[in-house]
Length: 250
Image (tube, rainbow, N blue to C red; front, side, top):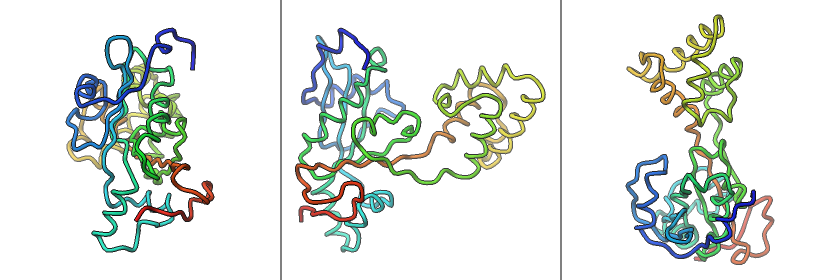
């Protein structure tokens, strides 16, 4: 983390829905928040500059099963739900005010609040996880589903014309690079984009421009990454590199 005097005065405290609402406009997802289990805020001198929201977990998750060795599988639905709710909390939102981004605060917020949930497992699902892996920096382990082949091909086509994976989060930059291309690169990438968008109905006929590029990148980056963290204070005697078995609260 680079030196910043403002960071020294920040502290993590129990928050509320008001802290989330103030910062919700800075999140890529819609601001509506469903039921939540806990909120923690990163406070500066006068106001919250970051927030993390924990929610109850969903019941079914293939990547969770892979990460835990199917430990929550094989029960009747009621028992399964009870076990999952007792042992897992899910990170629903992590938001840092733009002025404070790039300082490692998102990772700090995750790392320091996970133990406060007092459950064996904390999980998260992040659409932009491969581009901005702050969950991993906080100590979580990532599990990813294979990227669809057509997304791989489109990403490779963009790379051919000089647009790399780490740039796919910046719509304006990508659009500018596409607009600056000369023939034959411009013809090549236009054909690849049209082929890629054919599977999206009327979207496949979008005209070249910022909106089309925004839609294209939303499909390329929409590759959810599942993250999991095991609370070693609550789970003893397991191999954390294998995650093949552990005791859960019944």
